[in-house]
Image (cartoon, rainbow, N blue to C red; front, top):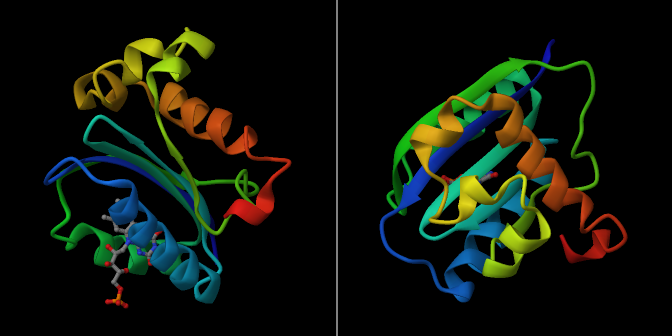
Length: 147
Ligand SMILES: Cc1cc2nc3c(=O)[nH]c(=O)nc-3n(C[C@H](O)[C@H](O)[C@H](O)COP(=O)(O)O)c2cc1C
């Protein structure tokens, strides 16, 4: 079986409250533990950017459920490919809500989340999408208990 990652971007049907985001995250962590999936979810100005990694069949099964979720729409797959190893092994699903300060702290990525994730910009920059996800996952490296 192949280890893969799938990265997608989507738009929330409405601006999500912290409680709504917590609910998504809590359920994702629970389900991903069962399915041996790991990854990271970012939320910026009404848009989601998520990476899921695991066995191909597990990633595809989770994504099939995620795709049908009415809390978001406009899903665009940015990348789906075989990976040699997991990059998010510490997180069944890490999470970070992008704040204005993040654009200041990470000026290289600022164009991608200044106005929420712009699908047109991120969609063509696979490497940047992965980099953004990894950057924020690593900011929680010393606090794995959070997720
Ligand atoms: C932005 C977003 C990210 C999600 N991420 C995951 C995830 O990583 N894993 C997962 O199992 N469900 C995730 N979900 C929830 C699924 O869309 C869906 O509600 C859930 O998997 C349904 O599972 P069930 O039918 O087995 O209850 C996510 C939902 C949203 C809106």
